[in-house]
Image (cartoon, rainbow, N blue to C red):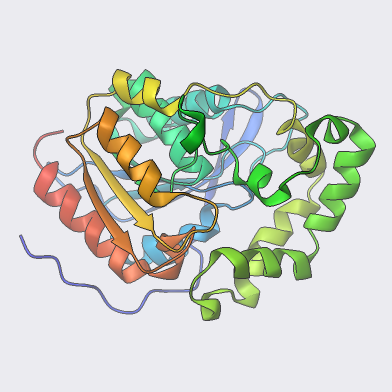
Length: 304
């Protein structure tokens, strides 16, 4: 089946709802109608982002799929309790959401940290995933040469001492600096190839959740959380189809080296390189949407 690139994407986020999970409010968005024989899509954002970051994708993909997007605990419009955050916590959140709210296995699509969390679900909660799409996915490999931090935040901070940031006052001051709109804009400009995609709306969508009560403690917990399971171990536990989409201009990811590692441990994957940075779904959404649609329909339709 041939998939054509759809019309221009929408810049308006779709209103969402709340789901109670472990006594916390979790924000999610649902669009489109269930299609017979075609699995739903669940979109999972990266560190510091939210369901808003998928607005251009939801607007198109809902024409052919039932589409869901969720704010991970600690981000977006979801609650921000003073907990220890980890890939295992978000894995369980996603698995429970799929089980309790969506009600059937999905194709998970995750960017950056969201990609790592989605991989954890597909590998360790396999009943929830019929397919996995990773967009510049984070997560460490056992081989230190290509071990990318499970959160690009550590990449951004460079040589800042982790031991210093374990002190609440230090992480709080750093958080206050990094959440300034001007700093958010400069950071995005470093990781987006197309500078015109770094809009005031995008900056605002990332800044707004940082003003929520508890947001600075979520930030601080990044430096206290134990490193999650290695990507190569997770790939060896997984058995569903995998699509890799790489924004090859991403300065945070060694995309070629990481691609080789993914293929080493999961050779039967499909991958595409795009002229984009760390967030190809937001930078070149029409291309990403077309690739997702084509892959899901040709690879997974009537097989879920």
